[in-house]
Each structure stands twice: as C-alpha cells, then as structure tokens.
Image (cartoon, rainbow, N blue to C red):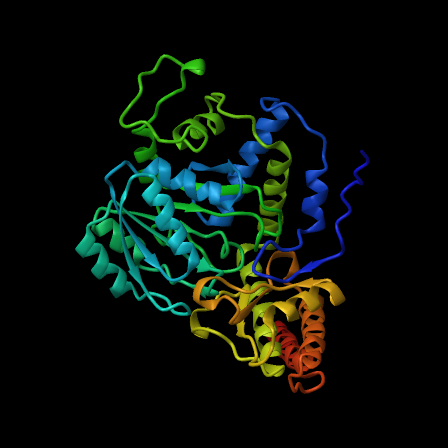
Length: 414
C-alpha cells in the first residue's frame, strides 16, 4: 500500500482559530529533540515559565505548560482545584461557558450558572450578586468567547471573589495576546490558554498559571504515584486525573524534576517561541496590533454592507461576527471562499449556527495584507451570491482605518 506524504494545501486561516502559525514558530518546532532531563531541555522549560509570566502579567511561580490542547489546560485547572461536592459558579455568555459547566460537573462539583444573551457580557454587579447567593468555592468564566466574539470585563472580579472567599479561574484561550489580560492586577487565581489563536502557534500546548492561593489548594491534594514515590505521604483528596494532576505536574516543572510524563518537546519549542515573540514585541504593542487590524476588518465588513453581531463595545479585538446576508447560503459561501481563494472563515455554534460568520484577525494573521485580501475575496463571494456590494467598499473602508492610524502615529511622533 502506498500512501502519499501529507502536503497541506495553501490556506489563509482567517476564522476564529486555529490560525496560520507564525513561520518562526513552525521553524522552532522542527528543531532536533533532546532528552526530557537534558540540561538544555530543563533550561528551556525554565525560560518558558519566565516568558509566560510576562505574557500573563504575573509573578506566579506556578506558571507552566500542560501538554495538550487548550481544553487540556482547562481540565487540569478544574480537576486539580475542585473536589467532589464543591460549589462552582459559571457565568455563561457562549459555548465555552457551557464547556466549563460540563468539565466542572465531571469533576463532581455542584455547579450553579447565570446566563446572558449571546452577544452580551456580564456586569460586575450581576456576578457579585450570584457569588453572594451561591457562595461558591470557585468562579469559572471565559474572558473571550469566540462563539459570540465577546470579551468579558474582568476588572473587579478578583476582588469580589476574594471578598467572598472564592477562587477565580479564567479561560483566556481566545483572548490572551490580543486583548489586555493582567492576571495579578485583576486578582485572577488560575488562568489557562492555548497557542492557536493570538499566540500565533499550533494547537497542542496549554499555558497555565496558578496564584499562590490556588497553588496551595492544589498542593493540599498532592499524591505521588507509587512507581515514583518519594517517601512523602499523600495529602487531602486525590486529584481525579493522573495526567492532569497539577500537583504532580508542578513537581515535574519545579526544582524536584519528579518525573510525571514525557514533555512534548516540539510543542515546548513552539510555546517557547510563541511567548518569546510576544514578549519581544511587547504585550501592549501586541494588543494594539490586534486592535488596529480588528477595527480595520470591522470597518471593511461594514463597507461590504454586512451587519456586525453583538455588543461592539465589548467585542474581542481579534475576532468579528457578522450576520449572514438574507438569501445567502452561509456554508456554501464559506466553501467558495475556501476553494476559490484559499481563505477560511467560520460559522458559529448553538443559536448562532448558520446565522453569523466569524472572521479572525489574530496572531500571525493580525496584519494588513491578510485583512485586505480577505475583504477583497469576500466581496467577490458576496457578489457571486447575489448580494449588492459597492465595488471596493470593504477594502476601501479598511484602508481608511489604516490611513487614520498611520496619520495618528505620525502626529504622535512629532
């Protein structure tokens, strides 16, 4: 049997993620392998911890990678922080709030929820009322939910949770790097992310950070598997997953270097380079870049006559949802965009499936040429679908945003 080698087609991934990885990240991934306890490897692990402290804006010692997609990080955080019967509050504003509910329930937690319409966010008052009523051990929410493109404000929530003796966990998979996130300043106790969005890498590694308070909760449940026992007795209720046991993973990444699993070497290279590039750019600069190209894409979509979805005041910088024009087959249009132009955009889930398109400007694709090319191709697809479109309206509107930004930058430099 002869099976050909994998030869991926040329694609510009302008959906809600994954995105086209930065070539520098792909190059880093192709480097040769070393042993998991090679001094070079442990040095890179330590550097990776330092880099993600900068990315997450934290001084947390417990900042590391979980091997797996962003969902692996979520599960590691929740299964390690929650014991059966613990109360959890999950504010749901989209698909990924529902995911937090499911994972918390699988941990045996008693889960309480509050909801808001898709396309809106919660006020601090809404969350504080629920925290006071439920008295949870943990509040778990998503900062940027790509299913709705909304960015939940986090300022003040850490103080609310601390006042009610609750931990605050935030999933920043879709928002980190493209939207402001200040873990320590905002009092976030646990945060997890992924590489495949604003961090400009492939899916497969999940950065994670724990505050000292959250770290103590995890270590209060520390048990070492029998085959590598170090003589210390187990503490508390054993964490229900071996692979996602953060107490053991902390030992693996810490000075003890107590073996847990074999680190995914090539993914560590990728995660290291993703963070290195962001830190080199500067976190404020990266957020500003995403904001600029997100504004240009939004203006361009409106220039094509498309109606934006949701509360634009609280939209993420890096992903935009637009209503599919009446009479247009949304899936057929996306297929045409992919087959004729090599550009991928997304639809959404649940109540928004088939009603909106989601267009990403994130990571390596948060750049002018990617925005303009996507708008030019989308214009042709809309025209072919019978939508009356002003010629060049999308590209022209985006160019105005770029011209205004360039003018403002010139003026500021004087």
